[in-house]
Image 1 (spheres, rainbow, N blue to C red):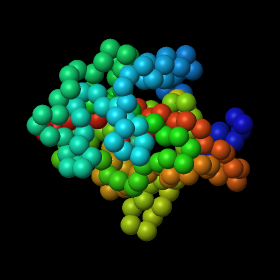
Image 2 (image 1 turned 30 degrees about the vertical axis):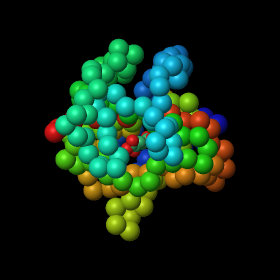
Image 3 (image 1 turned 90 degrees about the horizontal axis):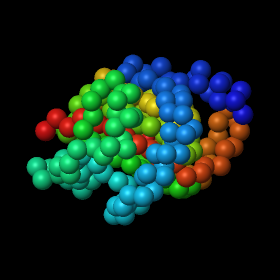
Length: 188
Ligand SMILES: O=C(O)CCC(=O)C(=O)O
């Protein structure tokens, strides 16, 4: 299995502004984060469950509205925030069961600053990037972090395809419950 992932890490798309950091958190940190997340209330208005911290993102308006402030990021998120190369004030937890995903999008340009981070917890999944007819994809390992800035953040869409398995290096991998913790800095 390690060989599989080591090969995969070499095929990280060459997209300017995309950084991939495997093992950004330890297994103990991952378990502690998932435990904490599972003690918090979930929002259920989307197909997947989410939690919003700092500022609520309005998916219908595709905006962070004036009354969106929820309060400072909770203490349990802060150790992760301290390891990031920027200072986010908003975090969203996404939960993906097998078959669930997120459609191709560029994160709201007028809402969020240049750098965006996403931490994968629990299980991995393929993330797809697209710019015009160019398409790239790679496997986000559990405990890994991706950073998107510049071209990767503004010119390429990113998506998690909604499916029950991924094919990685020719091998079919069944999906399992994946939780992502995304970090952004509000600019409105
Ligand atoms: O699950 C992820 O890693 C990506 C989440 C995402 O793209 C988003 O919340 O806008």
